[in-house]
Length: 285
Ligand SMILES: Cc1cc(Cn2cc(-c3c(Cl)cnc4nc(-c5cn(C)nc5C)[nH]c34)cn2)no1
Image (cartoon, rainbow, N blue to C red):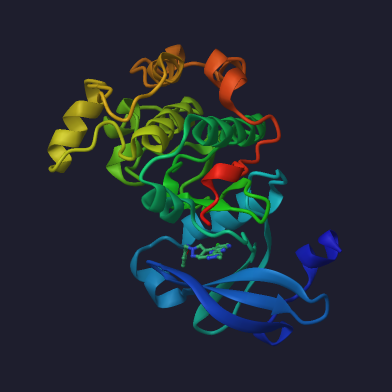
């Protein structure tokens, strides 16, 4: 079925399209059901005119090329794509519990167990990507979805690249960019380690570490690695130690992802299944 899905010429008549799930710069995502298999998917519909105006067709091609070949429980599947006169359609895995950033906004920040569980599963997904010479380059809450069992799914490989043809142009929001990308110098897979460190901080404190009112201020704080840990919420020194080993200016000195999985904070706090289950008490009545 998988190989069939890859070659089949899909059209909109193959799907019953349902409610909108979200919107992005170039279009919308809809809940949809493939008629023959009754398989529920997320159908991302992008407008060619907007893609053309923003000159991101090459990025979209790379997103499809890269994501369609990745198979990992913490990476959102891209089953196939098709297009018509005006639109490009991506047939994506449906993540039943929605967007992580909304969950983070609701909770303000996550417990150490939840943060460590998510960070460990993202580290495993990135080890898999880097093993295939793919760097994501845009790891941030907006690009993470939650599956039916509570597992994290990395989505939106729009900024990912095969490390053989690295590009130096600016990409993604500033908050998550490491010094070498902000300074537009050569960068490699260790950019994802930096972004995972930023994400870990935001999971625990509710804000990214170098956030500032002005872009120029954020830029300065990133290149100086002006890392501060607020007194509240209280966070374990193991967690701060891990973040401090990831947010290192010299990219070769950042904690390697396989070493991250052996860090005491991860070993102690992350659920080995990579799935965060609400403990009894936390479930709202
Ligand atoms: C264009 C455009 C919009 C977006 C952001 N976005 C992603 C989704 C999405 C995807 Cl791709 C896959 N599964 C999803 N499941 C949800 C969801 C589930 N619940 C209960 N609530 C929501 C929301 N959204 C999914 C939607 N928008 N990227 O490019």
